[in-house]
Structures are given as structure tokens and as C-alpha cells.
Length: 171
Image (tube, rainbow, N blue to C red):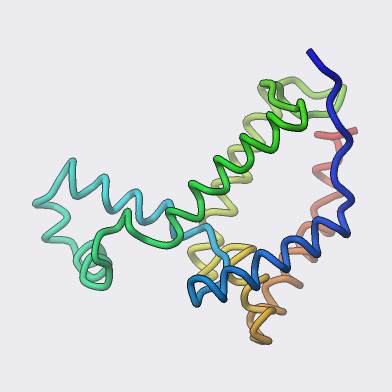
């Protein structure tokens, strides 16, 4: 196995992310986002598994009325691109292996449980806040939305406040 390359400079990564956001606006007329993609996949799955339930539930009916087909959503294609791009990036950098990133004093099971719980809480919060980090915060800030700045401050403030308690998962 060849040696993995170093990670990209985070400042360069930030500039590239900003350029991706500009291109997203130029190509699609929309910014970035991710939390809507799982919702689209869920609605499409419910249409297949329980079409009668989907037709009789207000949430699904309202969602389907505003979309041609849930899987033709911009966000679904964006998330597929993120998954494929992440895979290709890992493969090209020699980092494509299966491992659990954790601190030396934490078991894989504990790390996975905390990662899943964190993902669930973040997903729930993104639905309550009407957007995820990329949608509500980055895209919101790029169009000078006060809500975008408040969201970013809340995300970083919460992370800073909880870092003391979560640091044992890494140290």
C-alpha cells in the first residue's frame, strides 16, 4: 500500500469551498445544502413501499406537490456527487481504507455510538433549523442572511461549549 498524501491546507480548502458555492449559484441558481437529500430519498422510498400512506399523509402530499419527482432534486444529485467525490479523493490520496477515527483511550464501539448519536442530533437540528451547516449557514451567509450568521455562530458556539466534554473521544 502506498503512503497517504498529506491533507489539503485548510485555508485553500475554504477558498475552494467558496468557489464551489459560487459555481453552484451560477449553474443551478441555488446554494449548497445537504439535509434535504435524505428527505427526498425518504419520500421516494415511502412512495414505493406504502403508496397509499403517502397519498393520505399531509406531509408527503405537500412535499410531492412541490416536486416533479423526489429523486430528481438538486440536493440528491449534490449528495451523490459528494459521496462519489469523497470516494475518489480518498482513492487518489491513498486514504481509502476502513477504520474508525478515535482517540487512543476510546473503543471503536463507543466512538461509533457517539458518532451515530451526533449525526442523529445534527439531522434533527437541521430539520428544526430549516437547513444544515452548508445550506443554512454557508449559503445563508453568502447571501448576507442574518439567519445564516446566527446559525453559524450557534454551530461554532455549541461546538466550542461541548468540546470540553467530547474531547475524551479524541485525546
